[in-house]
Length: 215
Image (cartoon, rainbow, N blue to C red):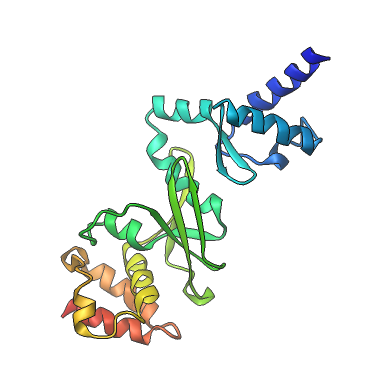
């Protein structure tokens, strides 16, 4: 009986080690008893063989180790950003820093969602999700990197999101200039793109803030 249990647990881990992330439902094909699965996964997590991404979602240590050995790990924390909380895409400080528009280092993964604000912390970092209106949930790309799909705002949309979510704090020119954004890294094509978002209903004040930045 004990050998059967070990064999079952082994099969679970073999399947799990092939998945970039998984939940109990993903293992239903080999084990339908969710209570047993929870106990087994909890045991493996305590033993360091599983990494919890969020409640009910995991990745195996073996999978991550393989990514690190093959040089494919750097994109993984970005990949799980859109998995942790759906629908969402990376934006704001995180993307602006990647494009050298922010002078300060982005310490966290920042994203935009149509759902309520949320925050997750796991072994890969801190993930902050900020709510935006449905009509502004656009301007992102789905980028395939090493078989991982990453949802990420364009440079122009990341700036729009950044200003939109701060507009109530940017009450005058001084406050806007204190953002210390490197607008020299914002080219003509970026200006043309962000102009499309200013035409959306409710974006007029953001357009005014942007014009101060350009001035």
